[in-house]
Length: 386
Image (cartoon, rainbow, N blue to C red; front, side):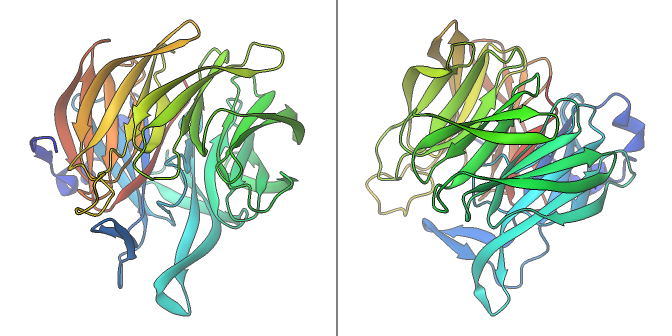
């Protein structure tokens, strides 16, 4: 575990009007799953939990600060990419893969909710809620801001929505051919003509073609590693990075680099990063990628694979190679990561501690600089594309 750094008062920061910083802010949007807790390595349903919530952080501020919050369904199930922020930071989309079983409050069942949050409102507000598919997980908005995709883990589909201002309209579903394929994360290429979907159920990354509102499965699949889960694409659109989370058996797992400029796209590099690389985010400069590694921190304490901290690992992207350049200790069951636009500040969210760790990065070292205490359990995080 990292040593505890000074915490920022959520209450005090929420008294600041969001509009006072919206013109200059760079926002990170955090989805909090308040119905899930980790009890000695076992995911447990919290009894009578507070509502799930979304926290908005100003990343451009130094240090980063919380500037708003709103209640909305969320889930720790699936990769920590169940938040998408529009390029102009006007809206965010938050999906929910699970909800408490109405017939048994000790269990969760698949959910399908997708919430649209108005980030320009003060305070921010949920202005639309629609249905995606069962187990709605990873979500993405194209750079033009007029199309969104949601990966539905429990039915083997990807939902398509058109976006017009603050209106979401269903525009169909893409069948990936197997209800157990486990679509997990989805990302658009910068030109909006291609999207990638990870499938942790059958170890594939599917390539989708996009033509206006028409999205199709090309039947081209890429094979990177065991259970590909989170992914991201560089701002140039030439490369994608995928984490392969494995089966949680204590083995070191991997991260793969995909050459999207190749015809057809293909894996060109795979490196080892440690146990269960749950979250992943490419820096806006395209030269580095942050990977949140469970490192056994989510295991029972008597497990031979338990470690009393997770890790954030930073890899350099050098041509078609990945090289480890830095590492920092984080807490337990830590999920997603987000970069500031200048690629010098890194956020890592930790479920157990209910906090966001703030790191500085100078191209070589990952240095802890602060902590933001969250009124919830941060399960996913998103920022606008650079």
